[in-house]
Image (tube, rainbow, N blue to C red; front, side, top):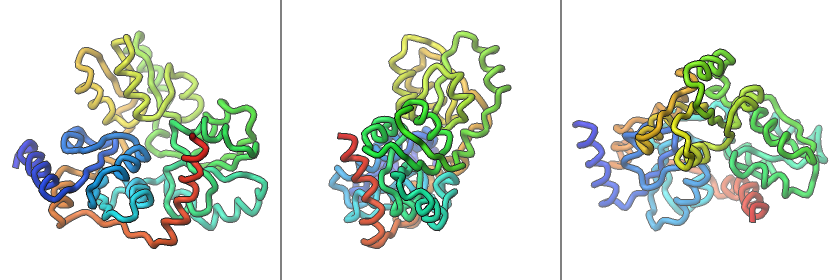
Length: 305
């Protein structure tokens, strides 16, 4: 099969089987083209909860599929590639967080959405990169224990000097690949380009950017901006997507090494096999795990009103 033939087969089968395909922004463009919804992890879970389809396929990583299941427990949720995990989500074990909570009983525990379902059961509030500042600012308690990304936590702390943020050493290995040499070279080669960066990058690099935001915020900024050149400081797939969406503008990767191998593990063939029912992995969670892990998400939604 050619790419187009495989895409057509997926689209045909998903319609006949009433399947909803969710695709994270970091997936390849050939997978984007068979999606029902494209976006950041929590936004995709919210869209899945609205659709009538009883079967949902997540083209992303495991914690994202778990979030879909938490918001739609009545649906069959599949991860298109079972090995696609998230190193950051798995950095902190529940036992470690339990110990940190015992040491800081007066802190509200806030979890980045990029965490496992098990870890979320021990957290008070969840946040996304785009909602974190607003949500944490609305928490009554001034003392916050934030897990697991200390880089995102540092960015939030600078935005909220009224909060006492206690951070845990953790973060995204992909965004940690940036170096000062990358920034210097990018500025030299593209002096007029705006640097757009994700807050999961290290603080010293976030400080050098022209815009800081989530993946979808970065893409929206680039599309709306009157500028014509952009250096993209997040997963490199975003460069390609923006080149398709804005052919009149130029986009450059800050570093050729900013590739999430877990995100890129999913192939179009994986999606095809999952649609047919011969591939992927169904996400199974007990009622108790869904109930307990969803509490921090419900708290996020309440604080975000």
